[in-house]
Structure formats: C-alpha cells, structure tokens
Length: 596
Image (cartoon, rainbow, N blue to C red; front, top):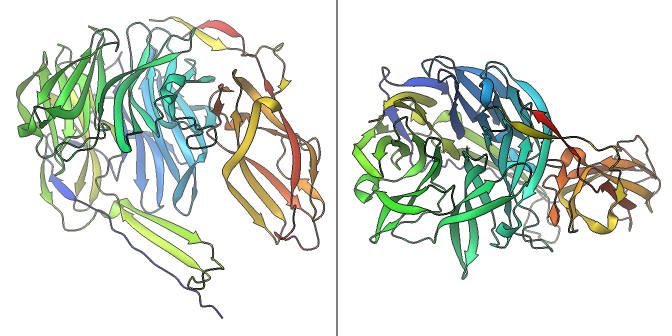
C-alpha cells in the first residue's frame, strides 16, 4: 500500500529588507500594509483633491484587494473611499481624473485557486466618481484588462485605457503580444474596442506592457510601454510610446524610443522608467536607465512633436545612481521644472529636480534607512499547489502537496508616485519598518468640454453565422466529477477573419450527446438543457468586439451533467457537442453626445 506524503516548503524570499526612520513632521502615513501597486493623481480643477489607487495586501486573508485613498486637503490627511474585494486577487488597477471633478478607477478581480491568480477568468470593473473621489459607482463590468493604464482625453472627456493583450502568443497562429486600447464615455457606462496595434505584433513581443498614460494637447492619448522579445537567441527589450488617435479613426501607432540587451555593466529591462507630459509646451519626457560613455546613467528623452522624434541627454551619472535606480516617477512643475522620484536598492527614496535637462542641486534623500533582521510580517503570501499522482512513477506518492510562504516586503510591482502641486511636488512611496509596511506621502519643494462619440446599438445590424470565421480553443481549465457526472470545460474564441466581430457573440449547440448516457446543459443563457442551448460570450469579451485575427483574452465555461449508472472517464466519448457561432458583423452606429 502506498503511503501518503506531505511536503511543506517554506520560502521566505526577502532579498533586502530595510526599515526607515521617518521624520513624523515631514511625512504623512497614508495607510498601513504592503501596497505593491499604486499611482497618485491630482484633480486638475482643484489641487486639494488627491487620489491614490492600486492594490494592497491583507495577509490575514491571504488576499489582494483594490483601494482608492482620497485627500481633500492637499495631502495632509487621507481616508479610504473605495475598496474592491470582489475576489481574493484584485490587481492591475489604473485611475484618472477628468473634467468637472470626475474620477475613474478600473480594477480587475482575478479567479484564485490555491492562492494563485487565474487572470483568464477575471472580471474588470469600472468605477466612477463625479465629486472628486468622495463617492463611487460601479458602472461597467467586462473581461480582464491586463496591466491597465488610463488617462482622460481633455477634449472629449472620455476615458482611454491601454492594456497588455497577449493574443495567441506561441499558439498555432503565433500572434505576438500587442497593446489593446479601450474607450469609455464620460459616464463610464459603455466600452468600445479593443483596438489592437497589428504592426506591434510583427515585433514578435512575448509580453508588451503599457504604463504611465498621459493626454496630449491634440486629443491623442499616449502611454509608455516596454516589450520583451528574442533577438539572436537572447532576450531584448524595447521602450517606446504608443498613441491612440481620436475616436473617429480608432487607430494606434507606436514609436520605439530605445532598446537594450542584458549586460553586466548596466542591466536594464527598461521597466524602471516613466513618462510625463507638460501641457503648457506639449512636451513629453521619459527617463530610463542606459549606457553613456560605457557607464550606467539615467537618460532623459524628450519630444516636442507628440512622440514622433526624441532627443536624448544624460540626466545623472553613476555617482548619483551607484546604489540603484528603481521605480522612477516624473512630473512637470508649474515653472517647467522636471521633478523625479526614485528608489535605491538599499530602500531609500530620493528626489531631484531638473531645469532644461540639467540637474538642479543634488538629490535629496527623503528618508533614512536602517537594516531589519526579519521579513515584514504583513506581506506573507501563502500558495498551496496540489499535484495529481503520477501512476507510472512509483517513487511518487499518492498525494504531493507544496505549501510555499513568500515574504514580499518592500516589493513594488508598479508605481507612479509623484505629482505637481503648484510650485511644489507631492511624493508617495512604500516604506518598510519593524512592525510592518506603510504607504507614506510628503510635500517636496521643487526649485473643455468637447464632442464625444458614444456607441449606440444599431437595431438593423443583425447577426450572422460566423462559424467559418472563428475557432474555439482550450481555455486552460477543465474538470470532471465522476460522482455527480458534472463536467466543466473552459474555452476561448479566436477570430481568424479579416474583419472584427461584435457582441453579442453566442455559441449555439445543435447536437449534444455522450456514449455514457444523457447530457444536460447546466449553464446555458437561454435556459435550454439540450440541443438549442445558447452560451452568450459577451461578458467575457474585453470591450465590445473581437478584432480581426485576434482572440478573447478571457475564457468562458461550458457546464454539463453526464447522466449514467456510473460515469467514468474511461468512456470513449464522454461528451460530444456540435455547435456554431453567431455574432454581430457590423459595428454599432455611433451617436454624438456631449460630455458633462
């Protein structure tokens, strides 16, 4: 008789845990706990209103939730005004301010199994506030929008969101990753897109991630991105700008700013970079780590033609960044000065200003640090993996369970921690101390309403059988309970055609059968349990369409019960379904509506 083994692995991963002695007179504790993802925004029409949004960890629940903190007194005091606990893993958030004190918060809730998130089953929620972030309303739900970053077009008042679109990377179609763009009306009740950049796929990215979205003066929305690809058998990285034009053309284009390959002297995956925009001069500025005169340096790239061309110069050399340049944040001040906040490898936040591309004074260390002898207890993350038995391997036990406990103290996945408040800057950073972690903030001295196009359903557009244009692929998960006969299959839909297909998109079952007995459909949208059952995929589509040569990022589930005296996986055909797909084949007709 085989014995049952139980394997416990505890990995306390804390490469360098440091604590800070914070001056209580200069710093404000915004909130306690590990905040691995955060960004700060100021109301353009009332600088007293400041929002910080992102993800925070609750170690007692072993869960990640979304948050929005608000200050109504220019950062002196803070309180939580929104919390998203729609799953045990809520992440990838972005937020933005629009005109008339309107604020937006896009938050993604993933499906969690064993402590690990499964984004393909996730749900994105858009929250909107019309009073500067005081109160919020859940206006829209859709599929997962990976690594989102958002901005508001100052001309139309509409929200524009960029996100990572993996497509069928590595699959039979071998589509590379690209960036998708979603558009939302000022009221946040309707989504358009995704609009994908097909040229970016030709770079054959295996992951391309947008961040630091900004509005440009001509109504264009832009975002910084970094992408991973293979070059001559080695990993290479691109840093660039992707722009989305006005709603009428619904197109994006991208410009590469720089590229790098790993090397011992100055390794940079270009993810430690940031973008900002000066609306007074319509200037874009990007800071990133690169090589200058065979030394590591912080490079400033600037563009005065909305990102078409870039000039580069060295901002700081190794004497200022010898101990690391991580998670930088940029912001333009009221007099055109450029402020920059960054984190060192020793855990200290530093700040400096530049004028006309030249450093003003020396970097200021915003707090001092001292070493800690143990990991922070509020960042413990437990992941439990259950491996099925391998019958052919007699050395394996019937049960093999891994329990991993990770410490994530001080880890920051993404941050945007600097905004301008008149002639001053407001800095936000994560700090680690003896009893745990906190999100801190401090003031730092620094030397139109338009026409918006809302989609409207065209009742005459109709639907069409698009079965020959699409294909279904496995969605990553399936399971069968032989006791109850319940069978679940997760699928995704790929649009192989040259034209998009629009929601509603439905799978219709023409025949359903099993060699084991009768089959009942358990989750059809029209209530039918046999042939004629319809599954509506619209809720799994990110946006209102599946673009040409694209696939759904989120999976949808087919749920059945196979009836029989003894359901068994040894049955040759436990389930057989013949189905077709129908969808809207023409876009929804737009109707003009002015923003608030």
